[in-house]
Image (cartoon, rainbow, N blue to C red; front, side, top):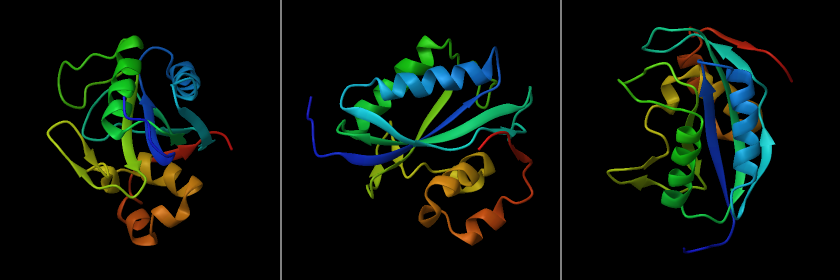
Length: 158
């Protein structure tokens, strides 16, 4: 594996099946335990309505990572954590036990069949932009926040 200089990456976490709060806490611990990776910041926990889907409300957060893993290797690790949490993909936007999305990987722009960074739909979702803005305000402009202002989102902790 190609190990490189540390990169600051942001990962969105979400869950709305099973025990979502516990799933997010376990996922944050698992992210911190990945090789060459540390969780360096965590947003508050948020409760949000599903976007383009039905089912129970989601619990969401964003974490900041310092990682030496290349973006595709980090994506593989995220998908393994989802699988370990019982993630199934019966249809698009299905309810889930754990969802981990790589939002940003440094300033990289990646376009491949498996991975697009920045995440292609992050600017459409309050459950991504609000916690990301909490941690990295320079990464989310006021226009982006205004565009998602109509989406229901509730901060649960600080």
